Length: 206
Ligand SMILES: [Fe+2]
Ligand SMILES: [Fe+2]
Image (cartoon, rainbow, N blue to C red; front, side):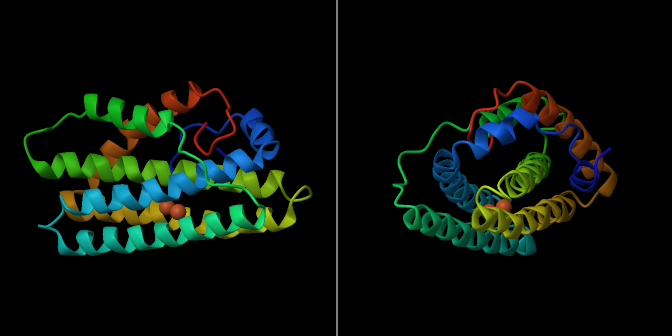
């Protein structure tokens, strides 16, 4: 298993054709990336409102939303440096499908904690996949666009940290490490099947 997968708990690697397509269309990647950061911020805030009984998790999600907004501003600045307009968001089929299939496969619905735990584990895996893809962008853009390569090198560390943060929050909500591990494994399998259906379009989760 490669280092990225072992650290991030992913069960498959991104098709290398995605990295080639992404490196060939950095404008579309940056526009989509900006929207991904904004969606990450709004998802964290939406989830925080369901975590009022878990003050540490509430605080963690609000802090995460602030950091994702900072990332949004950074990507927006990168777009403006390149005289590129933000443009409308594209559909994020990967994230929507991962949420849909995970929700359908949820084993326990009897307490809000189980639903929140699953949503936090889904959040962890989206961060993990984004981290893996930022690493590919860093590597594939090294010669072609050194400053953008360095930008992705900085951001991938945040995404790896967010992966851990989401899992820590899932543990705090469920209070059961074995249960979080079990849900992580089950949702990672769903994530793998979603990733294997992707078409390698030049978007962050394409
Ligand atoms: Fe981010
Ligand atoms: Fe993130």
